[in-house]
Structure formats: C-alpha cells, structure tokens
Image (cartoon, rainbow, N blue to C red; front, side, top):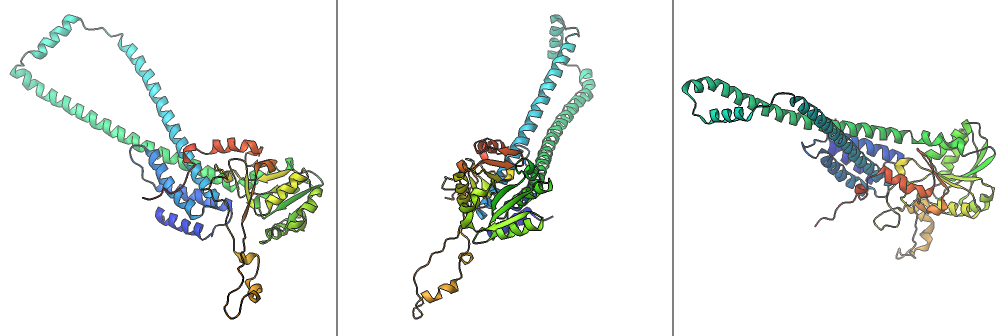
Length: 414
C-alpha cells in the first residue's frame, strides 16, 4: 500500500498539471484519495473526529490551492468533512442514549435494593466502635490475607476499569473510521452513477418532435439525450460548435453515432436559430450557492438568447458540482485562460513584426475557459435528486455541507 504522503503528492501534481479532465473524474479521484487518508490516519484516544477533520482540512487546502478553478475538489473535501461531523454526532447521540438506558437500569436496581432490611442506628454505632478499637494479634494475623485480597481485588478492579476505558476509546475510534469510510464509499458510488440518475429523468422533460439546443461536450447531456431516445422520444438536437475548441463537434459525433438527429450550427447563429428551439439543455462546470452557473464559454450568450425568446434553459449537474461559495467573492477563482494558440496561429502575424528589430505591435489574446450564467437566466436544475428551481439551490447546498467547512484556504504564514 502506498504511503499517504505519496498519494497526496501524486494527486497534487496531476491537479497542477491539469492531467485530470472533467469535474466527475476529479470529484471521484478526490473522494478516493480522502478515503485512503482516513483509512490510514492514526487517531488519538480523545477528540478523534477533531483530529480527522484537521487532517482532511490540511490536505484539502493543498488540493484546492493546486487547482482553484476545479471547484469539484473543494466540494468533495467539504462533503467529507460534513460526513465526519455527522458520523461523530451519530456516535455521540448513540452513546448518550446508552447512558440514559443505563441510568434507568440503575434506578430499577436501587428500587430492588430498597427491599433489603436497613441496619438500625445501634448496629451502625457498634460497627463504628469496633472499627476504632485496637485490633488483637489474632485479628491482625487473620486479617492480613483478607486485607491483601481486598487490596488485590481493588487493584484488579481499577486495572480492569482502565482496560475497559481504553478498549471503549479504541472501539469508538474504529467505529468512527468505519462509518466514515462506508459513507464515503456511498459518495463515490453516487458520483459514479450520477449520469444514470440524471438520465432517468429525461423522459419527463423531453417530448416528441421537440428541438433541443446544446453547447459544449458534456457526458451528462449525452446520456440524458440518449436516454430520451431509448424511451422512444423522437426529437432533433442543435449543437453549437463551441469555438475555439470546437467541443460541439465531439458532442455531435457522439450523438450521431447513437442515432440522434443532429444539426451543427455556428455559435454566432444561436440567436438566429433559438426561435425554432423548444428547450436549451446544457451541462455545468459548477453550480454556485446563489444558483448561478459556471459553464463552458459561450453559454451566457445562449442563456440570454433563450430568455429573449422565452425558451426554457435547463442545466444538468451532478450533486458533486454544487458549490457553497458565492461568485462575487474576490477569493473565489471562477475562470482560467487557455492557450492563445486555440484562437490563432502566431505565424500568421509574423508580417506585423519589424524584421530588423523583431518588435511589432502588441497583440493581446484572451481565451477564457468558462462563462458565468446568473440564476435569473436558469429555468430548472436537474440533479441526481430531481429537478430544482434556482431559488432552491441554496437550501440544497446548505443541507449538503457544514457551515464550518466553507473556507478551504491556506492561512497566511507570518
């Protein structure tokens, strides 16, 4: 088994070099890494949950710093922290319940003891006098084995009690880790099957002879559309090509290979074609706490066109993409710039340079990866748990994370 530090270091390198593509793959690998960390983490006898939370937070800060734009990493770290808190609370509640039952049992025993005869005051006084009287030699000789037995018995009882306490603490530590790992396994399974869970709802939203518009290459969207076709829905899909990376071409090829009627259009033709569309269905990079969407570049334009023509704008997102952060905060990084070579070939501008000095007019190329779609442009979110109005997303996110774990940033060193 690899050392935890080695696993974390390898995953950090992959995040920094952008070797992991897609929020789903990133979320799943993050959850698997944290599961390994939890299983190998040694916990103290006291405050096991606190120690586990500190360990996960320390690693989570590193993961988030390695690729701040991939919000799924922070989402999974926060979710695992929430799981630890919930499982610790569950164990504490069970322990308190056990103590309550024990107290009730003790009360019943006290009632039973009340049935025994009570010693009189004279008997108590006589016993006290005997205790104060100097013992005889015979009493001492006869009492030595008995006293030693009593001391040994008390010592054995104390040792047994200490061992019981130590065993209880170790048992609770193992129980906490076991419960957390089991719940993280469920989380990993939910991430792996989120496409299927969302696709099962397709037949409720796509109907015969409709025209669907989409942009970008989203596996969730592909499975959603194909699930509707498998349910004998006949419809056409308009795919915006998604320049400059042309991810729409990849999506169109996939849809055609699976038998869907597909038409590729240029991004600039979206406004011209939107009047013929019944619904816009797109994927998301992340869903923010206010219901806003971080999505592939170009989708803000599509959302505006859909609103102008009263076309429903539907966003498909696995629950691991729900982010408890707000987009207006300056410490939240929502975009990154891709290579300018996606837009143009630098060789085409060689004539603009002075051959003698090698200096030409400055040319700035901006190639953002994502767009922000405000919540008022979104009609419906479809997640693993069903369809939700944008105004409900905050409540859904609040139930999914703990308020204590929203900030995952390195503290500035003095």
